[in-house]
Length: 270
Image 1 (cartoon, one colour):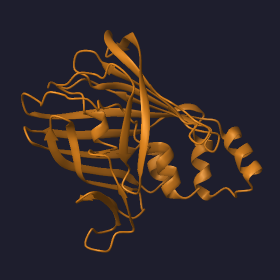
Image 2 (cartoon, one colour; image 1 turned 90 degrees about the vertical axis):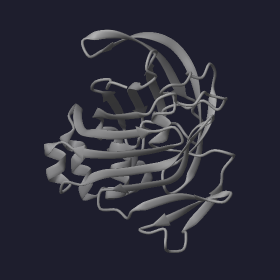
Image 3 (spheres, helix red, strand yellow; image 1 turned 180 degrees about the vertical axis):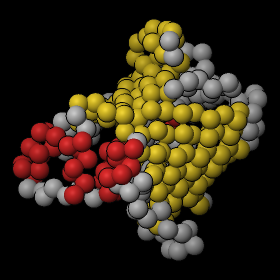
Image 4 (cartoon, one colour; image 1 turned 45 degrees about the vertical axis):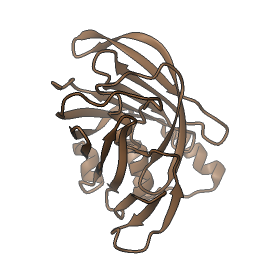
């Protein structure tokens, strides 16, 4: 497992849902900071079984899984969200905890998204992501395509993909609902992670009395559909009032034998 794969395990952004229907534009500017705790529950035995079955060789980064005994908080993620009448900017930094920071030489997850705001929600124009010591990844909308670059958008693109009318990224999906209605049914989402474009379907589930910040908060649960080709599970709880993600849980497939949980520490003043 190289460092790129490892950061996909630790920082695979918790996909959240966005409505594909008409939504009212944000009535007032939002400038807030959201801080999350990222916890991983790992089963090294499952990872070892996968390596044995697949014939893959473990790498030096395998030691990280051996450091995670049961559940462990591994990182803090801070998102700075600036949403205005017709444009937005979201900047995110993921910082490893002390033990993993030492093992991985203080690598960080850096993400940045800029774009416009319309009646359809946040529309990505440029998304950038750098995971540890890997190359900078860039997804940029140019005409009817999203082009993918490495290191710089001044170089020729390494790939591209058409997108159906609107584009989301691993940051904008989390903040689509602030000031808007939660979707009443399942939605299909085109999402880029800076190197490809994937489509996800999420379904509205049951309401919860969610324990949060010393009290119970009304929340709505959404979950991702799975398939033979995509067995990873995903659940997210949105606060019923502010429509911010309180918790996201990702169950990774047997390749990793791990579950990621991302918890919002406190709902900022909006």
